[in-house]
Length: 275
Ligand SMILES: Nc1ncnc2c1ncn2[C@@H]1O[C@H](COP(=O)(O)OP(=O)(O)OP(=O)(O)O)[C@@H](O)[C@H]1O
Ligand SMILES: [Mg+2]
Image 1 (cartoon, rainbow, N blue to C red):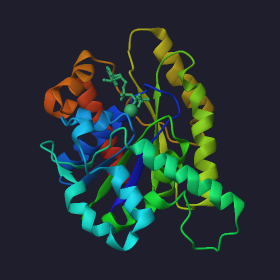
Image 2 (image 1 turned 90 degrees about the vertical axis):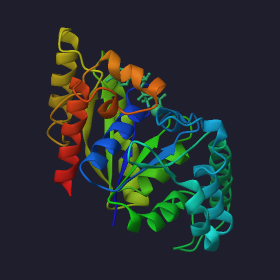
Image 3 (image 1 turned 135 degrees about the horizontal axis):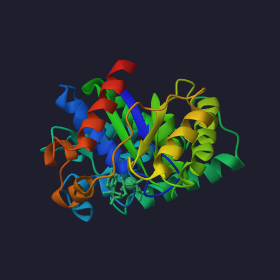
Image 4 (image 1 turned 60 degrees about the vertical axis):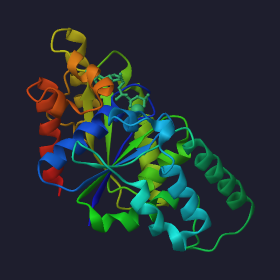
């Protein structure tokens, strides 16, 4: 049964998508069966794997809507919704239509708030979990890339996950977003998913030169290191990583000897050690 990871931080541009892609590919290169889930209407993960998001008619939005409207037929959608990519990982793609599913979940939330719901009845926070649970038998790891805009999509991802990884840009004030994510994780754990844990905080876009990066690393360690794991190797900021989305491949395939590729392999080793 797959172990499910969400990559999340409510701050934008911190390396969530880059981490989802490269962690997934690094795990696949270790012989693991990996499914990546693009849970962001921007479709950046879909694009980073070389697909045009707008062309993906079968996507996460369709699966979420099927899970709401016709859960008994959900499995029939899987063969067409899962892409087998050249990077060796499978992908459930996303595009702007995911905003429709987010809106639908929001409507469910409003109607939930206005009426009594029996325990066990499907709620708007666990729709994604109902999709992911049916896919777990086919994979060793499922990695969900979260977006920013629709909190309910992130709540759904966390409710479906065993672990979350919080990427944090090693720049001034970037770590300010951490308390928000940790608060959200705590609330999802208490309300919907008691098994959810923080696997760790991952420093991204790290430069060894500016003293600033090192001081962010130290302060994240000091503030959060007691309670949370901080992954051993920060991910270096390198131009090769920035070039990857246009090439449609991971850094592990684009420039396997790049320091950032080595760091993502190290992250994968830490993830493998978690079980
Ligand atoms: N280690 C790195 N070195 C250089 N560029 C990087 C690195 N990591 C990410 N980037 C670049 O920074 C930008 C933001 O990264 P990414 O898309 O992974 O962030 P994100 O948190 O998913 O953003 P969003 O909040 O928009 O979803 C991208 O252009 C990406 O290619
Ligand atoms: Mg992203």
